[in-house]
Length: 269
Figure (cartoon, rainbow, N blue to C red):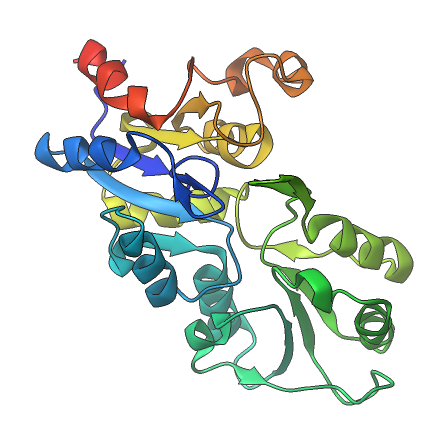
């Protein structure tokens, strides 16, 4: 087995929960840097631009720089600039994510959803995923627009429990319109391939550390990476999703938290 040179880490549920840092997370990140591991942070978080997210993480004591962040919005924007150059895009997401969409022609449909829009893009819209906006998106799709999703996450964990994500809304639009969404973020292989390009490592020498069995663990394993599950977010060792995984898609270890990562890596060397 190849030695681990690069480490990819999910953020929400791995490094923090509701912007409260996981105990030992900052120390683990510093240990990675001190021991020469290439590291980057891969996230389907869609409500903050990369610069904003980096600043928020630094404010809670996590040593993360913007150039280490590989986000679903940034990957989506790069795809739109390449494939939909000059096309009109309705971006349905919260926060300042729009800052990552420089060079993309953003437009708002009218209230009936009838303005000419070429592609509907859905990120972490939360309360923006109202009936009115869903119906506008549906009408645009029926009029010929394409559907892109930054991810299809079903839910995530906050301090008071689980919270519904945008994935079920994307699925509802697919079902109603008969169209299939192109998904850009995790667990798509292209997303992990971009992360490997940033790290400069091969899949077999790169470790993904995540809390989501589908998006983090299975996604990474299908892209040829190694993977660890931490139990501070969505799933723990008793998750029925683990037993449903094919053997080649399971994590090679389950850690109580990212704080145990340095010990795991030390035992690998």
